[in-house]
Length: 167
Image (cartoon, rainbow, N blue to C red; front, side):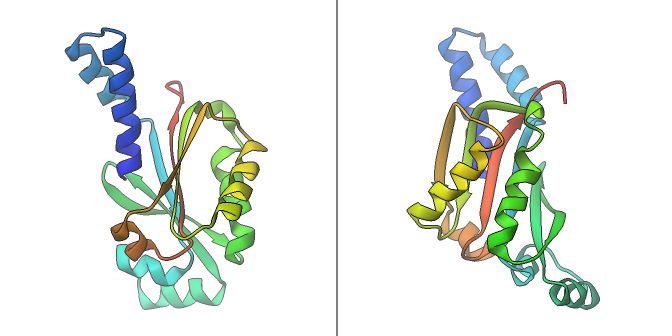
């Protein structure tokens, strides 16, 4: 969530550096806020229990089929965005494709890549996979906070970026 806020702070700072009036900065950042995308791929369905309660039937069904949840944060609310089917290593590629295959809808100025427990080699592989779809001007690698790590688990992966205004 804080990485999405970071994108808003960067936008405000850029506008202020250009000499924009404070009222204009506030108005534009408010509109820009609706274009922030923040989502996470959790390492297992067990981690979703900490963030969002699921019925026992749903949890059993999802676990039996090895669905892995992706969560989205919208207006401060955490929701299940979708489930991916398979094992985490293969799902990372699907998750990247899901986020970045439609690159026309994405502002390429910046990306926060948020992770819990990925080593340098794994992070580089993730970045190379993203670059197959889209090139960002700047990518900020952000190790997740202790709170996020505790709630999402080791090997959670998240992205924060901006959608274009016309989408």
